[in-house]
Image (cartoon, rainbow, N blue to C red; front, side):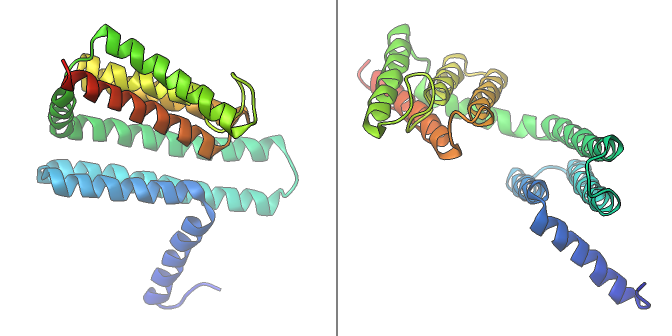
Length: 235
C-alpha cells in the first residue's frame, strides 16, 4: 500500500536502508568505508570542495549498493530458480556497484593522497631502511616461526593448511620489508595489496580459515617489524 503522508514515505525509505544494511554484508562494508572516509576528512581538514567531491562519491556508492539490493530482491521474487537472465541481471547490478566503488576509490586517492602520503612517508622513515642481513633474517625467521606454529597446531602440511597461513606470513613480511626499504607510499600500498590478494586466495581455495590467514599476516608483520627495530637499534 502506497504511503499517503510524506513522513510515511521517509520512514519506508529508511526501513529500506536498514533492510539492506541488515541483510547485505557489502552494504555494511560500504557504510564502514564511508565512516572511515568521513573520519579521515575530519582529521585531515580537507577543503570544502574536496569534501563535497568525496561526499558525492561515497553516497553514489551507497546508492548503487541499494539499487543492486533492490534488483536482487526483485530477481529472486520473479525467478526463484536459476535462470541465465536472472544471473545476468544480478551481475550487471553488481557491476554498477563495482564501477561506482572504483570511481570513489580514484576520487579518494586523488584527494586524500596529498594529505596522507607525507604522513605515511614520515612514519616509514622513523625506522629507516633495512639492510640485506635484516631482510634475510626477517624472512627466514618468519618461515621458522610458521613451521613451529604449524607443528604445534598439529594439522595441515608445510604448504597447505595449518594453524597459520605461511603464504600470508611471508607475503606480509615482504610487504613490510618493501615498505621500509623504499619509503615510498605507492610501492608500500601496492605490495600490501598483493599480500592481501595472496592471503585471500588461501581462503578462496579453502586451504585456510579466515582466522588462520589473519594469524599468518600478524606473524609476518610483527616479527618483521621486530627484527627491523632490533637491527636499527644495535647498528
